Length: 145
Image 1 (tube, rainbow, N blue to C red):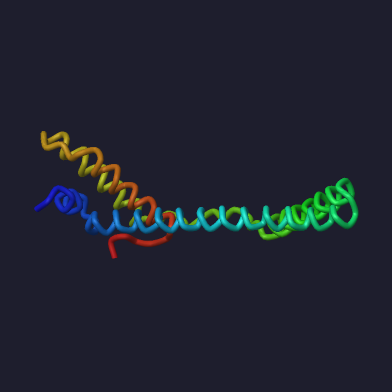
Image 2 (cartoon, rainbow, N blue to C red):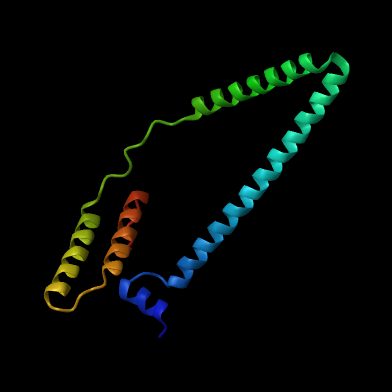
C-alpha cells in the first residue's frame, strides 16, 4: 500500500489521487480562463486603438480622445450598475445539523483519546477530516451518507 492510499484510508476519505486530480483539473481550467481573459483584454485594447485612430482621422486627436474616454466611462458605469443590481444579500447558510456536530465532536474526542492512549493520531489527519466535515456542512451535505 503506498503512502497516499494509507493516508486516505487512515482519514476515511476517498482516494487521495481523486482529490489531487480534482485540484489539478481546477487549476488547469483556472489557467485557461485567465489566458482567455488576457486575450479578450488584448483584443479590446486593439479595438479601442482602432476606434481612436478612426475618430482622430475624422475629428482630430483631442475630440477623439474625449469620445473614447466618454464611451469607456459609460460602459464602465453600465457594468457597475449591472453588478450592483445583481448582488444578492448574504445568506446565513444552512443550519448546523445535530448529526454533523456529533460527528465533529466524536472525531475530536477520538483524536484526544488516541493521544491519551499513547497512539497519537497525526494532527494533519484530524485537521483534514474536520475540514472535510466543515466544508460538507457548509454545502449542506451529510458526508457520512
